Length: 294
Image 1 (cartoon, rainbow, N blue to C red):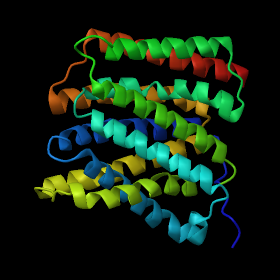
Image 2: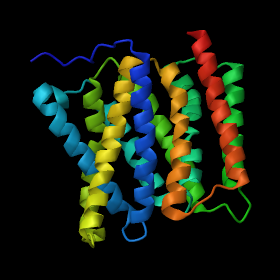
Image 3: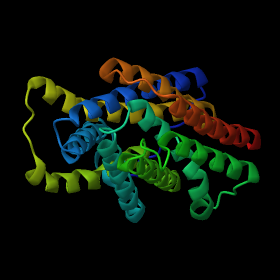
């Protein structure tokens, strides 16, 4: 059987933007459910549900189409490394979101695209300009405003959020390296395979039976929301350029504020909004310069 190829790109910008907006609506809901469940369950168990359901859905959807090609990779080392980065990013984020606001958590995660700018230089050989370097500095300054080191607001969860963003940036850089080498579905499958194995090994030590049918549904929904959200992102990229849809990622802040308020009566403070403006502004600056260069 010949290796599966990536699906052909079709230029339909509006459809691509709709897919991205759908993804950005799903992720805040998933984060809110994680925060809700974290009161009663260990982060490792929540991560296990998130990853295993995701893995099962990918296998269920793509195996009938691709057969064994789904599992065929030409860069097993890179796939292993991407899986490590995804596992750490998810574990750090899920561990932290219990102790911080949903909007604050997503604001810090916005630094990931800026970290990609720095990592892409030594790893991918992508040239970093002075303007991009300024944007990175501006973005990290925004993170400092949100987490406020040295103040009573700062806590270990803030460090975990930053670690999650940096690990996710590493994951994105690795996925770029794999683009054109392995099928996207293969990369999505391997990105959660290691996490499923490691978290499954830990389950006997932390497992707690869900207390109700509602908890079962919430735990199972994590993989569905995350998996479908990532699918929407992948579909968005087949219909529109990354430069066009990347700024839409910041609309997650709107959903995060709504979810935080409705589920936990959270209202972001002035510093969170100010830091978010700096981070988003830096991200948009990088996107604008990339678009001009293209």
